[in-house]
Length: 113
Image (cartoon, rainbow, N blue to C red; front, side):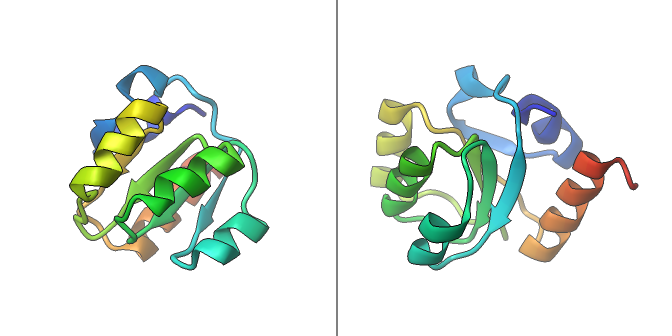
């Protein structure tokens, strides 16, 4: 499954990385503690978080994540968005709570609902 399919299925708003939406998703990770995400997420994951500061772009780049989904309608800070655009990191926004985004994403990726 690619990011573009997830954007459409979850009605996400793309804030950066529009040209990277064909990236294949290998898995997902959710967390707001950056050290946890750095230690436990994997390359190709889509990262679900409520964090909006520019360090999320650094972590996503370091871990080679496919993209970042911000939940609860959280918007990336201005410097975060600038860094994401410059680094080509897709950031998408959902108005849904994290629990619902994760459940829907899991169902899509595992074709269970």
